[in-house]
Length: 638
Image (cartoon, rainbow, N blue to C red; front, side, top):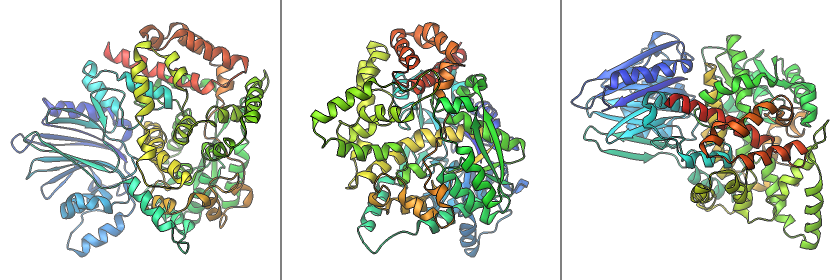
């Protein structure tokens, strides 16, 4: 796991690459390097910051150069041992044991044909000295990031947007459409970027730059095609993937390292399952969990996740470390706005950063996370809620209208405690009457069209409509007849890389820690989409197929416990500790002064939340994160 950067045919490319690489120092504190190739066949400069995980010797240093190829690479290949054996049998000789050397040899032998064979997470740039071509690549599922800015046939790229923004400064303009999308989703979808001139390389693609200024792009993995192939296999009643075997194998491969590996352990199904499997392969493994002040958790009506995490740790001999998160997180807001690159309104980013920081202080460089299981196996409440919505629409309107009126009048909280079930009911009724795709999107977005138009500059009405409609094809452009798997596919294509993988990468690397995600693995994905939706949601229970797989190792109390939250007690923080900051942002914040957000609409959000009529804590938290991100951009431009 590392940070990569570079330039191709870029004016003053060497010094620019040095500065880009320096900004990424937190991603790789164990070493740095640069490769240069002169003009003629194509001037290129590649930079690298190293976090040593496999082959800690200089044999794993980067950029790595051999046989006319130069590689700067960020990631891990979990099938590197198998690829190494195949290449060695074909006569390739290796100096060390790093996966970087395996990747370089695989590219030399198969070119882009090696990409479908790679199992892992990666973003890399490879330069061919003979042809003068530079190729950029991003992994199949978007686990690792790669940002770039093109100017004609030239390109500058980096693992993080902040490096490009810091170098190119005022020449990058904020994309107001991306900010509108951020308000809607509370993250910036992968197809957009916070700056107009910058872009993200799409998952499962490669992009080649030639010395004549031409470019070529290709795709080596299609999640939609994998899902459709899985659906075809699932039609065979005799076919049923062995999920436990697939997850167990993926977890074992993700433990590959020459340094200590630990796990996230929330006490929920996903992290408990991975921790139990990891403990079988690595007895005495460490795990890290979070907790909150008792009064905050009570006000938020949060489940007692710590109790379950302790139970799992004791049962499997895991060394558990508990970290309490208090409202001093306000001090982290400017730092997190910097590290997250784009406005991301999920407080789980802070949880990830603090857990990884604690692990790093204890000498741990690698963590396993249960990220991705909810998207692939229909584990979010929204999945079940949308299925219930279909049934709800069959209820006569004479019954639905008084139910809605009653729920509208109920408070989500009093001065002493929150009412979780009321929050869920209000959320459900906000989309239960809508058509399928619209309802699904509304189940995880922050505002409807009227609310969003009310919140932003009236001149952005056209942008709002563009943002509201641009991702509909993510739901419709496939042949899946299975409602549950259509939701899972949309989530895995959009929600997973756009939010969860993005904040996980940035927050963990801010603490110089590598987070691996065994569920976000190509073989697990294939098994997930070969599992019919009826085996994922049964009755009122989600993630059923994964729960049945986990029953072979976990106690029933853990497998079938109510779903926990890797989040934070936002209502408690907003109504108490952060209230003065929210007031300042509403009345004199940079976004209000710029005209992008409207003060009156923000004040209504504050009033609704304070009165307990609606839960607007998530909305207000994201306004804070957007405000701090916007301030950092203003400061960088000044």
